[in-house]
Length: 273
Image (cartoon, rainbow, N blue to C red; front, side, top):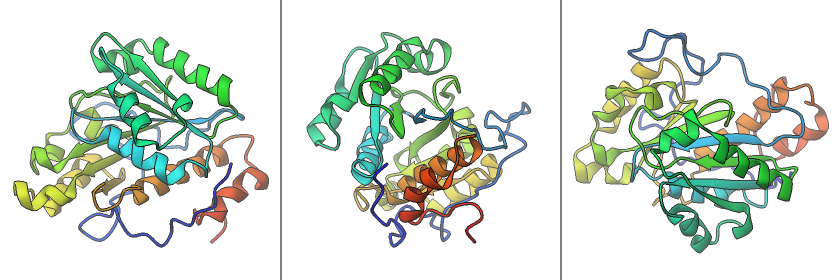
């Protein structure tokens, strides 16, 4: 890993109420009565395997732009690659390549030919193949991001494909979106409410969105972002780095050698405070 940039001085991407919301595990999932999809205990990643982070959300919420921002923040600091999903095109992968945020060879496009949730939850074979191909070509990798095609609020990833899930919504849909719930909103490991710079233009109340998100997520974290104002999605990038720490701490392979690079960028490590 090559982590050498201190993200600790940035303050973008915080809740309008003064920071990220939540952080602890939930015992219920919003309006659902089933057990939460996200286990309370940190999920270990097998030694030598990249952390796989799924990024989902509705069409136009800013998923690809968030992936680009995370590549800007993390490429050259962690070894990473990206898999994108579209139904009949390679548009999202093409966008990332044009943006120049990552070596084009590290970006793989999956054309699902079906509803987006099918390829990330029901039959994950084509995405697993892409992930494994990237790991074989460039591994050992630290991080692989898997971006879903645009879907509705019910879209979730199989934990057979990813280790962590980020769900992205945006304020253009109105401040009612978080309280509508749905598994993507309530059960993802991180909810990102994007395009906060548009809130005054669409009449969205960010404080209401923060309150409602906290209510339906029962302690799971929420971050507000504007990729216009913060092109590296700093708060989300720090969350991803923290997941690397958590995953490696929970794995049998956790040791001082593979934790030291994360400590160097200011990520809090267990037992250091």
